[in-house]
Image (cartoon, rainbow, N blue to C red; front, side, top):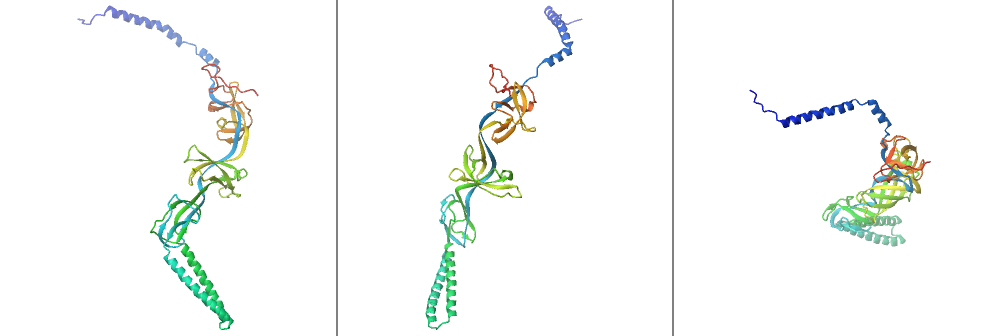
Length: 376
């Protein structure tokens, strides 16, 4: 006995409509599958090649400067490690770190008792020998003493006077003074410390002028000289530039490294501090009206060349570059003012490639046009 429910008329009608729709679609599908591939290939050949989107800039005149760049650390013009010239206990330390001092200013006072006793002792010996020498001069006239004895007394007196001067010098060493003017950079002594002779106790730096030394390749020997302007950018002071000058240039080249020393000087009354790391730029030539293009336009696949945008196509053009000034490069031959050169998108280009300059002013809203330079 069949218990399946009977098919309703509405369901039967929907199934019939679906079958008719599939049959109607079959002729269209067969026609697409049977399309002629030869015709599609011909249509593809007739379609023009797509233009390569690039960025371009025009050659223009501006001032450029030839320069040498390097990095180094700033150093003070003068620096002194103050040492103790005699031994003794530090009774007083008269300066602190960061304090400005003048040449000859007392820095540390050491115990001077022993040195004072030595001075007193030699003073007495000098007075005794002076009296003996004066009496001997009177007696020699009376022929009561020989000339040799008088000479011996004179030599003894001179020797004792020298010992007295030495004792006074040792006494002066008990007061340690600043050998140069500057600022106390560090001190390694406290009151009550025993100081050994020739021990460094204080470091003084002269910040009135800072110097930066560069080891420059020998090929630049003919271009750098004293007095040339120098620009300094310090990593510790971003966004700020400082100017100085070349103070001196070594006249010889180091045979081992193939470099020569160039010392640049900067004023110390700025925010610059000794020990800062700086990037230096020495300008040795200047052109007020040079033809330049962005440095990014130069090709790096052989001889110096650029892609010149002409008539909507990229034309490889040989150029003669000159000075490089930051992001700009001087062009001495090969281009003229107003020529448009490709600065971005060069990798996808070949000589004669169609290009579209995407940053050019559009001729109509929403469309970019190719930038064409004047014909030569």
